[in-house]
Length: 314
Image 1 (cartoon, rainbow, N blue to C red):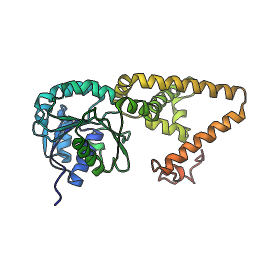
Image 2: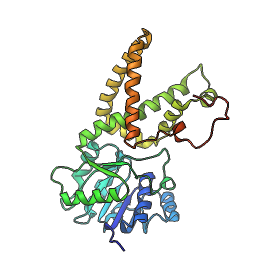
Image 3: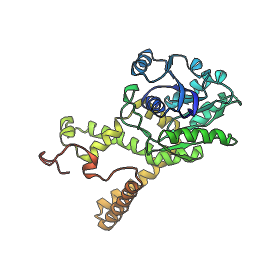
Image 4: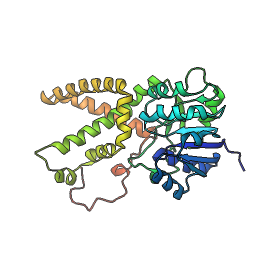
């Protein structure tokens, strides 16, 4: 039997990411013992019933006492409170990481509470669904996805390599990045699309000339895709906006400028400009498919046959 990468792994937080990690750790034999920690007793009981770990505690300090790897899977805004709680109880030589969607803020919140005897390596697995909670997780969540590590300067290369090996065993491709650069990149490829989605769905809901039933009944694929993004965890995305606000505001400003340019092209009937923009952006989509980040299956890979559904063409 292959030796586990870590003897004991502590998962603090057991939502979609945490529960998916618990499942893949068990499936791939990545740890000898998994400790599940959450302050919510109902959530802890659900995790126990699902058999996600080997032991279950409501104290984060107790969870990390003997852990070789600690993975913090909580909303970004709670990072400092968790770091302050676990810092004095961390095992010398332990690796501490997180899964938050912003990194510079996590470094500011957590690093001051990390003892010099541990390896603090923030991380971000770029994977998720619109579902949340321990029931939502699945072992394949990280397969074929990127995981970005943002180790502070001077971090032990062996610790980085060990954490990278863990994520690779989960199915991810690992990249290293500066925290601020990570936040700028994710602001455009993830944070801004979600913010736009929340706004578009909110606008549709507020329109007085269109009823809610019409929005639901006649929603075309574009709007449905926006609703999927807008169904993401409100707590998580509130914290993303608050903790990556500088990069998000910069991207929103650029987006507003480009949107104004598009608005002028539509108003003045500038067909060449519209065609050039739509052609260029179509090329980006094709590059994403070619990179294996999405599928070009008919009807966006939806399983249901719609050829016999009235008005199915969109």
